[in-house]
Length: 203
Ligand code: PRP
Image (cartoon, rainbow, N blue to C red; front, side, top):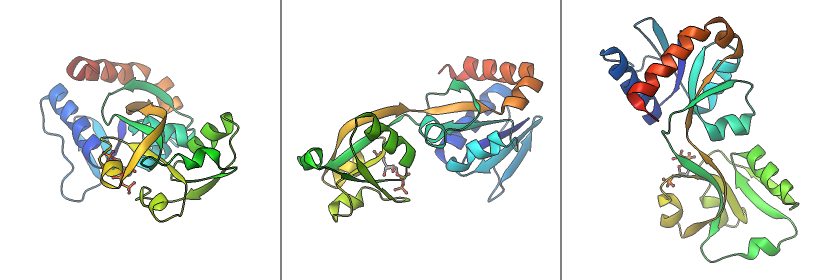
């Protein structure tokens, strides 16, 4: 079975879960992108690419944030909430500044364009999306946008930059996802693994 993991903290946490299940060390060596162990092949991919690997069946299952699968509208099965990497997707802006609410068209900086569009369109509020790839919090500070739609985890980045969460759009955490074909072919194997993860991790 091939498992796509998002680089960084979540991958480490998931490999620690496998260590508990199989009583063996699971670790990507140096800069290796593939780890083969105990009948599994783990792929070390970027967070945003996990859903693509799984949807296209380059991996049978994967671990990815609910925010990412929502933004990409991925055609995959969602099997389990691992409760790791908990965060919110929120509208945020400069502390105490509510002026965006009276604008006829709000300038929204984000990398989560679809989530932002859907949220404001449901409220009937016209927006202009400014697509950024990172350090989104900077944009209202220099007048590039009125607000941002971004991930808030500890709230530290907002606080350090004189900003605040204005509206919570959704809650997110890491989910185990599966390719639909892989799941129908290897249902028992995948469900057994999910059950084992549940036993040692208990999310
Ligand atoms: C994410 C997110 C926020 C920050 C939130 O950025 O975009 O900037 O984490 O975390 P906090 O609430 O704990 O401060 P990331 O570190 O992934 O980098 P990025 O700016 O490149 O998106």
